[in-house]
Length: 446
Ligand SMILES: Cc1ncc(COP(=O)(O)O)c(C=O)c1O
Image 1 (cartoon, protein in one colour):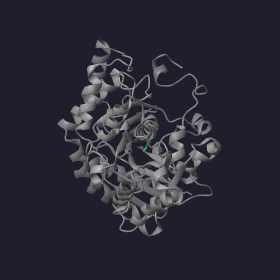
Image 2 (cartoon, rainbow, N blue to C red):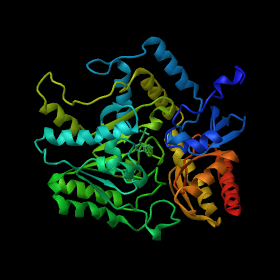
Image 3 (cartoon, protein in one colour):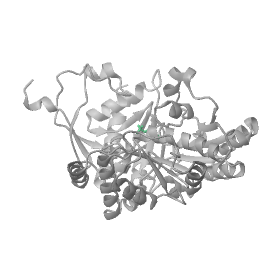
């Protein structure tokens, strides 16, 4: 291998054990990206691919943003690292203030983490610590939901509900966790936006409360739109009902907005899009446009105040944090992203493009092999007919789409489409046209 392309083609593929990847298959026929600009990637064959899922729901502002690159570079020149415990620097306070300007209600206290998974663990621990601080230590149960995805740490897979992520670890999951049923009802197939039926599924929380004692439940955590499982849009009134039940019993409502946050639903957060304010909210991914890792939990002021009031003066109030919580390069990227959001009116752009995008997605309904389509804002899921085992068709279709110049995220037999917000209509057209050709061809040859 020549030295010129050493950066683009590795000498060996064996040592890197890749995450969430069929390593053996990948290493036989790798898909390596060498460049990203705007809404396109270039792979190691020099082929251009349109990015139909914003990387992994990370890059609404598109790739190669020089503003973010410059901000990170300048920051690293000035101050590269500060320990985040008992020390700090101005940027993280500024970013927390900017984030709090977009969060709903009084979710104005921002705890920085490294990623979505660490944000979820932080939210769970905050809920438990909050009730301990209030003298309600008996509230130790957490309610999640079937088909939920809350990252890959033990707390996250315990409250999550994607079976493949849980079953290997079933004997080490967190105790005292319960699950609501998921909201994907057969009668809601091919519904664009929020389904009319299914709000009553939220009453599962009431049933769980009745079963174990509402006074023992600390929190209920859901993704407002279940993302990684394939875009399950909440039925009308569902999130409102969850809020009512939480209020009735003093249970904290946590929205995991790692995907839905930062404009994907056409508003800053899904909380505003669906008109329901949780007590805590997680975020990550788009907060830096995906360029460097950063997650956060926004908590209501009552949670923060209770934790502050309970601690002796001068003591650490919350024994929790990470070495890389809000490190300078992540914060610099976050601040630059905030500027882009503001200058380019990015949330409004997502909202304006959503009907065109969803119409395009639902125009694929006639393709033999597609068994359901769902969507809201700038996110949609296409379920394709299962082959002999779950995920086989999804992966094969993903590979065939990739070969035809379209990059997206497939989970099981669902293709998840979540374009960057900077997409113009011609880009949406290209995505839809490539989906049509790719999925049709896949089913013709299988
Ligand atoms: C809703 C939700 N929560 C948590 C996570 C975990 O985020 P990360 O992969 O950054 O740890 C994800 C990742 O996709 C997610 O979609």
